[in-house]
Amino acid sequence: MQLSISPSEELKVAGQPPSIAQGIRIYAIGDIHGRVDLLDKILSFCAADTAKHPVARPIYVFLGDYIDRGSWSRETIARLIEHGAAHESIFLKGNHELLAINCLRDPTLIDQWFRLGGRETLASYGVASEIFSDRKKTVETQLAFHNALPQSHIRFLRELKKSFICGDFFFVHAGVRPNIELTKQTEKDLLWIRAEFLNSNQDFGKIIVHGHTPIKNVDVRSNRINIDTGAFATGVLTCLIIEGERLAVLSASAD
Image (cartoon, rainbow, N blue to C red; front, side, top):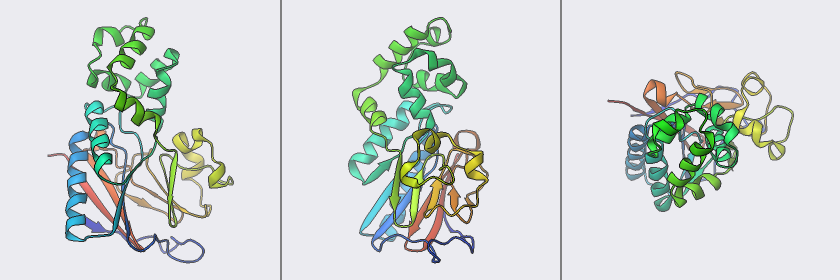
């Protein structure tokens, strides 16, 4: 079900309500974390919305963290690749994708990845648990993961973008560091930042649309909108719709 949301009265850019160009509709989708079941639902809701309310240029923006924690990381990546082949889509990099990619060249990072849900991703790619359950077999785990990844998945992970701008909105996985221009943000901040960003009331020049920090409901602030509703734990995946000055939310819930 689509719900209109009331932006904060202070949600403005250059003194005006934020907007995107006429003829564009953004479907921004929060952290998926291996919940391909919820991804399929939200994409079907978006397709139904487009069919009911046609628009010249629908753009899907995925905010990263497609893998880990949930049970279907491989299936999620495959579904996103399939979707991107048929629809204009922007795939942003999350900290979980960054860590997984880095593990392909640096096995010392595998323990950190495991603490963030990497075991579930390896299992989804068919890597034997007797390999990755043995902490002494980090090199074997690294090699098994590399061999299990289809080339299309490797390309997908390596081609993820750090951010995307459309109209008055800046889309990113985690957020931005205050007092630094949007064009000069580091990848580490874009993918990992929390407190410094979340606690800031600074006007960033764009409204920051982000995920990374799970919340119960979409959080609209004067300078940012958080749409990560913790799909892997809550069973709720959220999509923010932006068209002109209008904001709306679509949510997909587990059965």
